[in-house]
Length: 458
Image (cartoon, rainbow, N blue to C red):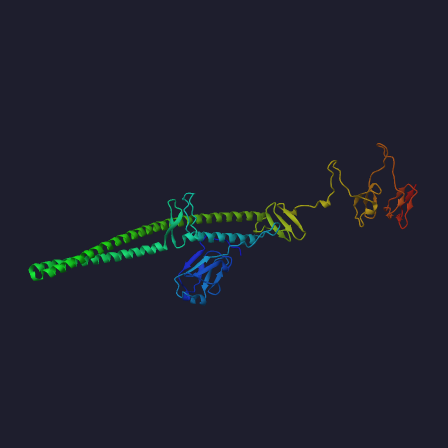
């Protein structure tokens, strides 16, 4: 079904509507068959006829209606339905040399090519590509799959893709940050314990001054507390060192994360440039399509194809152009329009007398008497090689053609005739004939002399 293909995006997205979300959901891009689209319920690809039906209008646009099975399919309460162009990219027709060249077949092929270009353009608008203003030497090839597995994508100083941090690096950064926080908490706790121990030692020393009887015991207790405080301080220092290392690791991870964010920004810019390139490619494809259609229309106005009779209008219903051609299947022959009438475009050479290349003489058929036509018509002319003379058929018999008498030099003295009648002959009515004998009439041969005519034999 050939239809004009509009310059539209081959994708449309709807929030659920209609009875229970069944739609219908219209699409404004043209399709050639109901299999030319794909329908998604959120991220779930639906199946034609099972989950939805397609209605196509005469202009190629149409609508999608979700079936009961489609409504029941998970998710039962979707957030959106997406309808996208999804025609299988293939060549449906192969034109052969000397074969038929129909407008509807060419239109179908051109429609398909335009649909494929629009589908690709819509996909490119969603892809990551380099902008048109990038250096021509940029290498956008990704690292090998085995190398980039479980890693982020980064870019080197030239803007070329390179490997970023791995999933393990990200997990380690998270672990380091957690450890740093835990170490800081432990250090704070140890410092608090040391402070409490020092306070206890001061209090004990004050008590020893006031109470001499228990000074020795209190001093011993103070010494023990001071030792504990020193150990706690040492532990706090170690915890602080661990916290510093974890914090450094966390800072490195944060730097990597910032680099990844910068990379994402660059990729977004590249995607925008790719969308612009896709739009340019689409415009070029549409211009090529229009040019091809115009060329075909011009050709279609000149060669009208095979028809059973002379057409009065061209294939578009317009007035005929002088020089138009078509093949008449009834005659059959190729015919040319002169501007006012149809005439044969060529005439077979079999119906003409050939001309020699040296003297300009005409070639007449030549043969023996036995090779004469079995059923001749009046006006036949040939050279009889048996009689060495030209002869013509007058409607009833063969007779000599011109020549007159011949002789030496320019003399016209002698008339010669053969002396054996080998073929039935009738003297033309109201005419007479003469021959130089003796004359022999072969057995079974008849010479007819009409009433009033004479045949004189000398």
